[in-house]
Image (cartoon, rainbow, N blue to C red; front, side, top):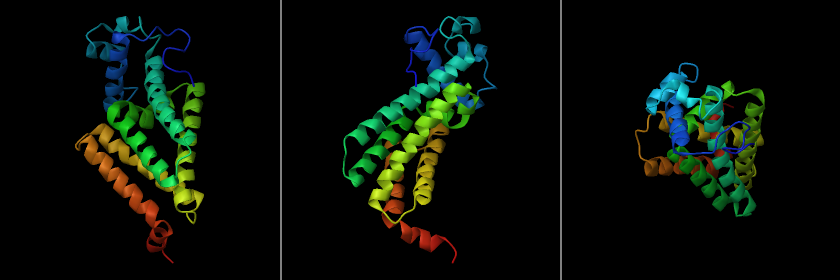
Length: 205
């Protein structure tokens, strides 16, 4: 996956470029990618729409930078955790912290990654999807180390549910980051620790 500033035709990252990315992320998250125009992005950073083209070749390049930037940050954290070879419980705590921190620090980018990445060009979308699968697989591995009787399908469902908890915060941040972190950690730990007991209690005989 290309990092920020590495794609062909991109200008070096500067203050105005970062402002454009941040403003576009908020607009894409609130209105959707298709409903947001270059003029809207320019207005949000007090430049004309055409001035945005001095920093990006087109609107899709802004989208790419938002999604790739968020995903790269998330995966760098996950890869460091995987490389540390920690006990499963500690690894899970750190994966949760990594997810919560990335979501709190870039809530709009998380929303865009979750809801708008299907607008990416094919190659970029495939790269993001591969990174997402790798992220899920790392969580699933750790969850099943904690509770070996949990199936891959059950653990994967749990992990996707955890990720889904971040979306309401990214769209309407009504609780603080500390409250969100405590809620997410508590819910995840409760389900993971109870494991198959939860399944037996909720799945009809």
